[in-house]
Length: 321
Image (tube, rainbow, N blue to C red):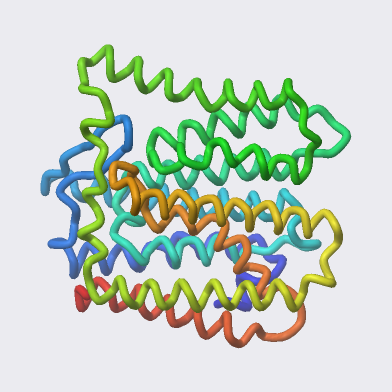
C-alpha cells in the first residue's frame, strides 16, 4: 500500500475513499458509546448530538477527512515539494486522523485543519520578487478563521508572520495586510454572537474533549507520535544535502509552523480556556513525514511505524482502549 501511494499514479486517489472508510465502519459498528455528546466549534459555539443524527455527523466527518487528505495532497504536489507527484500525504493524513474520534466525527477541528491546509498552500506560493499582498491576505484571513474554531491559534498569530519572512522581505504594507486579514474573522464571529445574544466567548470556551484522551490509547498515541517525529527528523537530516534551496526553505517553513503549533499546545496547558487538540499537528507532520518515503530505499523504519499506526487504528475502536 505504501509503495502504491508513493508513486506518480493519480488513480490511487480512487482507492482513498475505501481506505479512509474502513475506520469509520469499524467505529460506527463497535464503538457507538464513544460517540461524543457535543461537538465544539470554538467561538461559534457547541452543538449537541442526539442518537438520531449521529450518522450524519459521522458522514460529514468522513467527507471532511477525505477532503482534507485530497487537499493536503494537492498542496504537496502543487507546491513542488517533490520533483514528481506523490500521493503519500493523503494516505498518511487519513491514517493519522483516524487515531481519535475527533478526527472522525464532524467538528470544528476538522474545519480548522482544512483551513490550515489552505493557509499553508497560499504561503508556500510566495515568491521573493513578486508582490505577496493577495496571498498574505488570503492566508491570514483563512488562518484567522481557523483561530475562531481553535482558539489556541490566537497565541501564534503574532508569530506566524515570522515564517512568512522565510520567503519575503519585511514590508510594512504586507504586515498591515496580514493584521487586517487576521482581525476580520474575529469581527464576524463577535458580530454573530452579539446579534444572537450569546455570552462573551471567554465565559464558554473550555477544553471539554480532554477526557477523550484519558485512556490507554493516549499512551500508545504519544509513543507513536514521538517515534514518528524522530523518524522524519532523522530522514530529513539524512536527505538534507540532496534538497535544492527552495525545498529547504519550504521544509524550514513547515517545521517552524509545526513548532508554533506546539507552542499553542503548551499555552493550552497553561491557559485551559484555550481550546486545542492534538490533531492540529497532523498537517505539517504528514508533509514532513512524506519525505521519509521519498527517494531510494524502502524507508524501513517509517514503514514499520506507519503500519503500526494502521493496526492501532483498526483495533482501537474494537477493543475500546
